[in-house]
Image 1 (tube, rainbow, N blue to C red):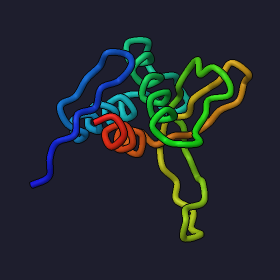
Image 2 (image 1 turned 30 degrees about the vertical axis):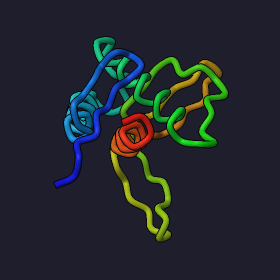
Image 3 (image 1 turned 120 degrees about the vertical axis):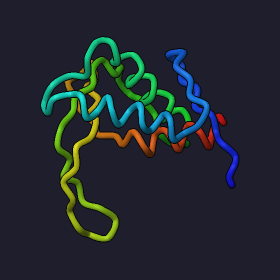
Length: 115
């Protein structure tokens, strides 16, 4: 059995294992209505997840300040050339730009980098 990797976010939220962090952020995503902002109770943790993800992945920089997070449909092309529609978080920046991100990829990157 593999070693559990903790996930500790800059917001102060901690999880003993990546699976628990994934379950938490999946619930936040699914509890957020489509095209709506994440609830104020969860916003700082989702923004911390994004920020810490960017810090864990080399070459990922945050050129503008992330200020809000929404749940939206994402229909980006996948590596095999197919398109898959999924629900995911979109970070909204102070300059009006938006960027999709996967909570599961973020959790994995944080656990592997900082765990």
